[in-house]
Image 1: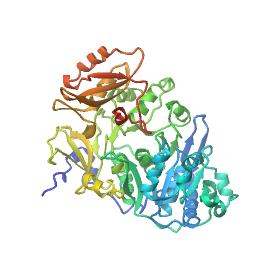
Image 2: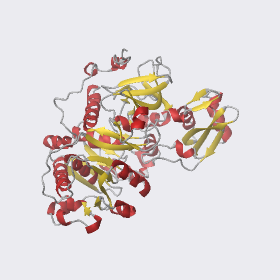
Image 3: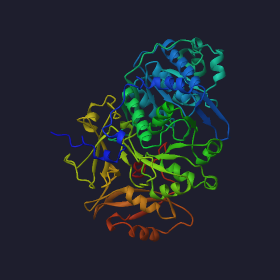
Image 4: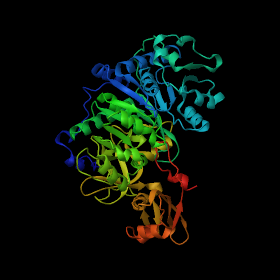
Length: 549
């Protein structure tokens, strides 16, 4: 059978050098652990990571310092903890300077890293630790205390949440890493670990991450992301922006999303490092007013964020009064509301909507960094990526028609951890079944309609919540909206809308009339529920599942 996508028709919209794209493996490093070392050779004493606190204070690490400290941590893991290549390290930390040191140190020691959501409960955390087989966890003191006896048998490295990383203590050697264990609890401090003088052996693991996700089948599970996946993704993003004339290099980027999430991880731990970009990290961007000092102290060039983050910034008076002029921002994680995109572009500059999943190392497509505005599209498949859009029988649908999105490429994860049954459902003959409903526009741009599981079926007609939510939030009295399907005796399902209103709040009748002006009758919500706020994930994505009860 002839592969229907080998021609990659969207490449007609690429610059010449991206057509027939092949990854250049001759100049790349062999493992993501070496990205930081290579960057230190090129950028030396330039700042690599900077933490910007809400009070205006900052802490920084240069590329050279980051290499030295991650080398020390790697030596500690190998020698003091006697961990073997392929062992798993869990990291449950808020954003800070410790995060990149632990990541790169673990990779240099040949370990696999599993990032844990710092907002997870003890039950959720223990599930991931056991499922991943983690032998050591790096976390803040309070989080370790919360887990208590559940950590028996694991090595625990703790970080002081107030300072996150005390380089003076680490470099002075006044804490002896070999004697810093807390007896039976097998507990060390990060500063003690960083006092290690052991030289890492240079071993590497072919698997780099167990990245957990709700994924395409609903249950939290670990995507097995290899070192090759990470290097390919970093190269693809680099080449995509470079060949479209807006390379990410040097300059300053802002990381407001939690680094444990694949979207922030992709840029913060890979793309910015390779580019020599100063990564300004905000510990917690809730409320968004905590970003104010970072924007005031630094001239930000790039930023990766989600719809609710950009909407929140636009609602801040200080942001409106002195808007920054970024080269561009990237939006992912959830659909970007057209009203937010339009206001951001008018006030700040270009916003590039993209699309990706944990299983694709964070990226599948992105709008090119050009002057053309394409609100509502998630852009072009990134170089080296194959796309199919298929019906329920697995047949490719015509341009313009919707179907399930299938993805294949060097950024796609190898499998799910210990999940043969999951593999058979989601990894189909080399193609990742995303569970997302998508279509190609006549222009060649990709549009995501919605999640298959979120689609509402009203009298046999498909209703995509994203479409209804976009109409609702285009009303000036609606700040946020989420749409779900509920059982209906007459139509099978009907549309129910949850809305967060602005003052003066519109009436239900007004919202109904607003929807009827733009939507077919079967798409109109039968019920409107007002909420003070909508449930969100740690990165700000609205959680429709929580609204279903």
